[in-house]
Image: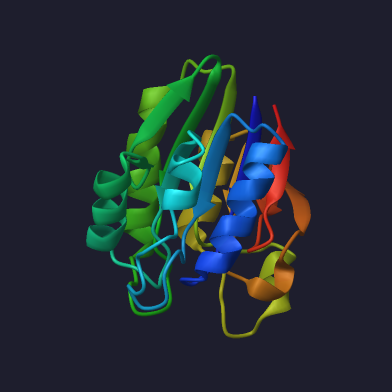
Length: 200
């Protein structure tokens, strides 16, 4: 499986088109949006359409710039899947997720982050490869050191330590875009707005 993952596009429809062109050119099987699709819930146009018109399978989680309602609206409007508290399996790859962050206009409490990740993980426990999708990064990581304004999440960190996904895809810290590190055996990738190709 080949995945194009990105986040933090903040309503930039030109960037969405550019990323959709890349998804097509790279012939990816799946597109994963790690939140902050909009800027304070707006705009919502031409952000997912470029991927859908190219017949790409799309998964998303909300960031701290859009509400769960906006993420649900986008998912319903474009026929894509909002992974916030849910999971999906494709072949032997399972993806599960939780959006939002512990800071910003659409804050979510750490205990809710952990609870939603535990809940969504149950749907993919049997998958050979497990991918966690969040907006916020885990606490205690190098990513966290790139910004004194954007703390890591203790809830995400506890979920990584407990559930041990193979990969964690996140964004949130713009300054850490493209950074990869390990937390235990989990490969943590800040996919950023330019996106990352992940081969499974």
